[in-house]
Length: 280
Image (cartoon, rainbow, N blue to C red; front, side, top):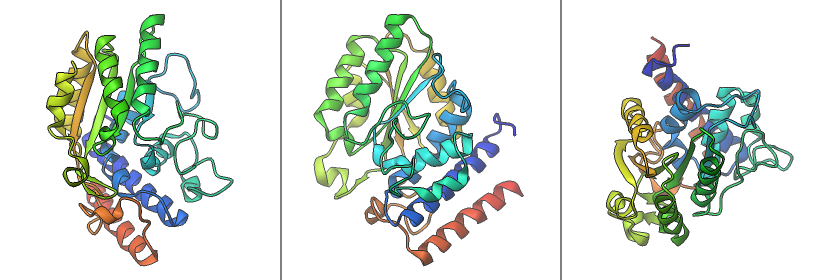
């Protein structure tokens, strides 16, 4: 597999999306919409960007990842399974009582999870702590986190943002999944966070805006982040909630609803068609 090829990464992202649908369908619950919207970001991080090893999930020099929007666990599990942390077949156990794949990521159950997350707003604080720890010890690892655009309504996010800038955590990258929908409606209707780029910039962050579904733009943004010294980087990623499944795209009701059998078949068929096109 040539992971320098964007086509190969697109195939992986498509398989990740099928894993999200597989997991939420078998669980009869979960959050497919905001999981589908971060498939490309997670694929690029886990297959191209981060220094990680599924056979040594706690190696000291690994890069760290924090899913601050922990309800998007189906996406994280799917990418980890395809990266080799556990068998892909295990995705069907999502949210089962005895499963390692709990509704939100738990480091107590699954090797490769750097911190348990799900209480919105708290993940970025944990990421700051990891990044500061690396700085204090002189370690070279980097820390990546993904927040939701609804999540940044939490005050703790901005405390962390202020702290990260004050401590010059240039080893920290925060993606904001800007799909413009949260559980109760559009983010403007609920509690508008806009303008997001200007807010992070005002807190002292290097800010980059991208299309969340473009591997070229993800790659360029991460290269810019690594080249930026003395300040953390926020990548504001404009995305489509439910991306890749036609009837889920930009539909708020798919924030926390699982597909039924008919919807499952339709979604998987659509994604298999995309995959076939990439392989053709």
